[in-house]
Image 1: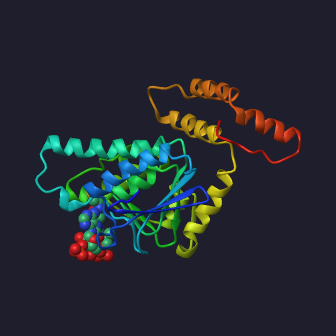
Image 2: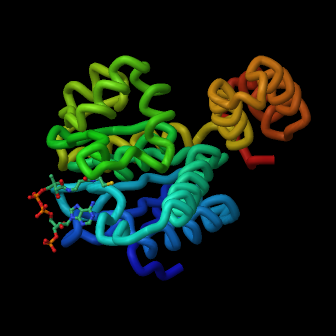
Image 3: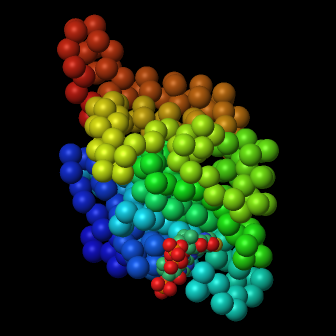
Length: 259
Ligand code: COA
């Protein structure tokens, strides 16, 4: 599938997606959102894709934010539409039944930090920097950043970052729990691939159910404990659950089919 602003490579079930506007520090313009929209359709439906890495082109930036040149003379209504579009796409990343992880290889600012936070978890290179600098522009985050930052690092730390526009480095992001690991830049993709290779051996429907149940924590329309009961029960109707338990009892490796 050819994209204008994304490079993709599928290897051993892991799709590596590189946002490719290096001369603009991979800023998210309309085309990137259109491409992400198409990409997500493929991720959801293509059975060859088991898990996904999202990263940025070059060694300086993951994504330096929404493309500020597109903010021009937007009306209040157009501003709301822009935020809605961004949130819709990022919600589909968060709700993807297949794991999507961010490899943050440099600046993750504004919409870049929001994109990383929409992913299921994050790995950073040592040079990564995170921040929500929108107040410098007279704006606030619009793609879920006010919500996910507070969910991930707690309200006090989140509000400080949101209203100061301060950036934090990778070590602080690790301390705050914003990222799971910090590694040298040249090891970033291999670290992510090695984690996903392990995840890709697990029962895909159970993996999807874990993501769904964990996401319910922050969904006010759902009771996460009830969601867990339903999803746990549903697992008993899968071939993979029978295969997994039989394989354990027969002391062999399970061969999951995602059924
Ligand atoms: N939107 C549009 N263009 C952007 C951008 C963004 N969010 N971030 C960077 N760019 C562009 C710059 O305009 C520049 O383009 P040019 O070469 O045509 O002038 C190019 O990317 C390189 O950026 P530059 O600012 O020269 O790099 P730097 O190393 O001096 O600074 C940053 C790096 C990340 C600190 C700086 O680019 C920055 O502050 N970007 C905006 C961050 C932001 O506010 N994001 C939130 C948006 S809501």
